[in-house]
Image 1 (cartoon, rainbow, N blue to C red):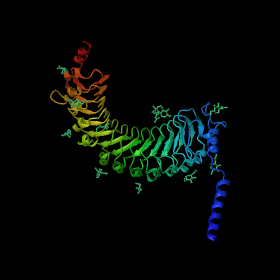
Image 2 (tube, rainbow, N blue to C red):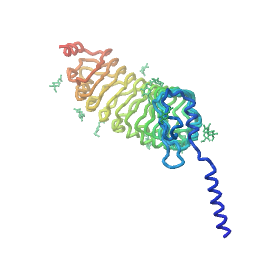
Image 3 (cartoon, rainbow, N blue to C red):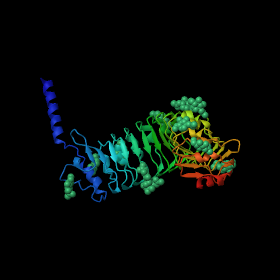
Image 4 (cartoon, protein in one colour):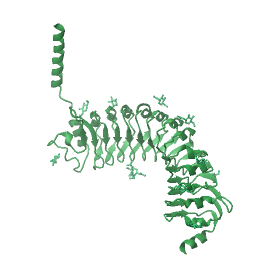
Length: 387
Ligand SMILES: *[C@@H]1O[C@H](CO)[C@@H](O)[C@H](O)[C@H]1NC(C)=O
Ligand SMILES: *[C@@H]1O[C@H](CO)[C@@H](O)[C@H](O)[C@H]1NC(C)=O
Ligand SMILES: *[C@@H]1O[C@H](CO)[C@@H](O)[C@H](O)[C@H]1NC(C)=O
Ligand SMILES: *[C@@H]1O[C@H](CO)[C@@H](O)[C@H](O)[C@H]1NC(C)=O
Ligand SMILES: *[C@@H]1O[C@H](CO)[C@@H](O)[C@H](O)[C@H]1NC(C)=O
Ligand SMILES: *[C@@H]1O[C@H](CO)[C@@H](O)[C@H](O)[C@H]1NC(C)=O
Ligand SMILES: *[C@@H]1O[C@H](CO)[C@@H](O)[C@H](O)[C@H]1NC(C)=O
Ligand SMILES: *[C@@H]1O[C@H](CO)[C@@H](O)[C@H](O)[C@H]1NC(C)=O
Ligand SMILES: *[C@@H]1O[C@H](CO)[C@@H](O)[C@H](O)[C@H]1NC(C)=O
Ligand SMILES: *[C@@H]1O[C@H](CO)[C@@H](O)[C@H](O)[C@H]1NC(C)=O
Ligand SMILES: *[C@@H]1O[C@H](CO)[C@@H](O)[C@H](O)[C@H]1NC(C)=O
């Protein structure tokens, strides 16, 4: 009997506790968020005539207590700082504020959002660093911070803690320092976009173990060294862009069998040497090939035109060669590429007579650059086209 009384006492105590504690509401945090921004009327629905779960861009959980699970206010003309009160919306799974004019820092209080999966703050004017606190958002799947003025190093903690991360895009900021080796821990990553920053050092070889990699973009940084052989494990890769850096070394002969799904290969503006491997002709999904401004030498793969979906081939500013006996076969084969838009071969060591088959290049061709070589027959080509 004593035990039953004790239990019922506990129950009534709990009941009192549950009814007397006011249900945590997300309303004050939303109002604090609104108070910091000018919105030009886009938050007019955020008024007391309806519950906050009906406000524009606010999505609440189905079950009580009603908590905000998504805040989607992309492209709504919001201007101002992001209130740290956002960290009070602890049920938030999606925060989408992309394409607004938020400025100031990314509040460290975002680290309190343990349920956050999708963070889209891209195309704003956020400055400062990525708060290391974001590594507390351990369920994060996508983190998109492109087109801001963020700087400092990419926190290593992200790679140590955000083990569900699939997408990280930091393009067009001012990030410095190396690509953290810890990113190699993120075995679900499929998109890494770090272009247009000031990153230094080389590609951490450990990244090669990330089998899911599909998009890898490092364009326009200050990276150097050789491409680690481990990256040729990325058999699902579709975009590989390491252009405008200081990478060196050569492309392995068997690249064609390593990246069967590659659509874009960008390696221009580096210090690569060696020949363009013939196996490239086996990358049957290739649409764009840019090797401009390197020190590639030798002949262009003769069967390049096997890649029927090619649209852009930029081999300008290298040391590629051809003569009357050898090296021009690729032009004949490119007639097979019915979607070809641009072919740039200028500033190389192509010589001899331009093959007549050049007239059979697709009528879709918009740009054909041949200048600064030692080619004869160009006059004939012009005559042929005009005549
Ligand atoms: C946010 O949470 C903190 C800590 O729980 C609290 O002190 C603060 O008043 C809250 N702010 C808002 C705007 O809800
Ligand atoms: C308050 O929001 C409702 C929609 O939720 C809107 O119809 C109404 O015009 C708003 N009131 C004001 C004063 O903006
Ligand atoms: C940083 O994250 C921790 C862990 O979630 C949290 O306790 C702390 O309040 C956060 N810092 C700030 C400034 O909100
Ligand atoms: C970044 O800005 C550029 C130029 O305004 C735009 O084309 C691009 O789509 C933006 N990127 C993202 C991820 O929004
Ligand atoms: C970089 O981001 C800024 C700010 O969002 C934008 O104005 C600019 O067009 C972007 N540049 C590129 C190359 O995307
Ligand atoms: C994550 O990466 C760091 C640095 O490479 C490493 O020291 C650490 O052991 C890794 N952690 C896990 C869980 O793999
Ligand atoms: C990836 O490539 C490296 C070097 O080419 C190799 O040693 C390694 O076994 C491969 N596999 C993984 C999962 O990294
Ligand atoms: C190509 O090689 C020459 C001679 O070795 C060197 O001077 C030049 O800087 C190199 N160009 C590139 C883009 O690496
Ligand atoms: C292209 O692939 C075929 C079939 O896998 C192979 O026999 C051939 O050697 C490859 N060509 C090159 C140049 O690697
Ligand atoms: C022409 O392109 C197709 C793909 O569109 C390819 O299968 C075929 O092998 C190519 N033919 C030649 C002769 O290169
Ligand atoms: C261009 O293609 C046509 C049709 O396939 C062919 O008859 C002609 O010989 C080709 N011209 C040259 C110069 O190869």
